[in-house]
Image (cartoon, rainbow, N blue to C red; front, top):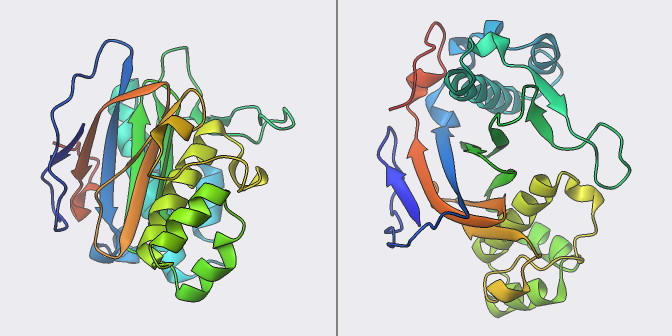
Length: 257
C-alpha cells in the first residue's frame, strides 16, 4: 500500500492508497520527494556535506545538476541523522562490495553498526527521490525521455518489457515507468548499469516474472516524471511525502513532519 502524506508541494493527480495487510515479514518503506525547481542554488548550505560531496558539488557540473545533487545529499543527511542519533554532518557512508566483482564500489550504505537504515537516492528533472527502509532498497525517478531515447534504449531491454512498451505505442511515459522499475532494482542489488538490461524482467504486467526475492512498485510523483521503489523481500506499506523547500535551505536542519 502506498500512503501519501501531504507536504509542500503536492503533485496532482495522486493515486489513491489501497488497504492491504503489511504482514510481519514485509518491509515498510519511507519515501521523500522534493521539487528541485522550488530551490535556488545559493540557498543551499554545503557545510553538512563531507569532503567528497563538497568536491562533487563544486565540480564542473551544470547548474541544474549541482542543484539536484546538493538538494539530494543535504536532504538525505537530514533524514538519516535523527534515525542515527547524530548531526547531519556526522553521517558517514561506505560502499558495499559489488555483487559482480566483490570490490568496494557497490551500493552506498550508512557506515554504522548492524541495524542502521538502508537508503537509496535518485534525482531527475525537477524531482529528488529518497527511500529509507530496514532492508535493502532501491529507488529511481526519471523525467519522461524524448521519443528518440525510447526508440534507442527499448531494444536493449528484456523481451517482455519491449513488448509492453510497444503495446503502449512506445509512449515516453510507459517507457519511463518500466525504466524506473528496472533501475530501482539494479540500484537495490548494487550493480547498476553493469548488469545487462535484457537479463531481468521488471515490467508491470506479470508480477510472477519479477526477480526472485524482490518486490517492485511504481510511485506517484510529479507530472512529467515516473518513479519506482524496489525492496529486498516483500514490500509492506510505502509512505511517501513531499518535503518543502525549506527542509534543505541554508541554516535549516529541521525535521520532516
